[in-house]
Image (tube, rainbow, N blue to C red):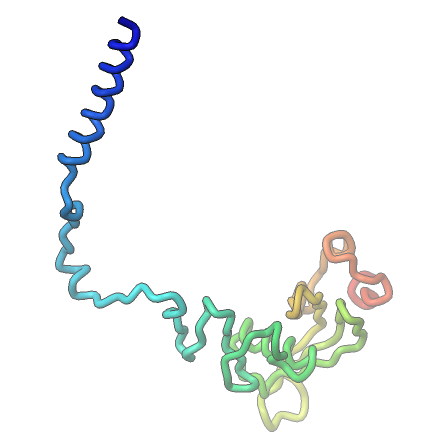
Length: 174
């Protein structure tokens, strides 16, 4: 009786497997229709198909380097010829000014910190129209402006958040 019961259960199990296998369709599942907007967009979803306005492929790590007029990977090749040039380009972008009108002078510089002055002058003018001081810190392979101008500065935050050397803050935090 026990053997008959087990045999019945086993045969029933096999029956379910066979029936389930026979009822599955060999045709693919229904595909959702494409709406008119999708059909007309001609979007290709290809890895690396993300070029910017200069043709640089961001997903491959390339970004535009204005001084060299090319796409490059900043961890493979430096974009700027000096840290001062990098600060000059960052200030030009920040203030929407031509790079030629910005002069950057680093008064103190280490491998990770830089302080100095900046002046803005139109070409041909003997003296700058405006200017001030700047502080920058190196983050990875890039310099980041953390302060520029003539106004007051939060010296405690700069000392704590960026660990700026005290001697580089002379003139900023007197």
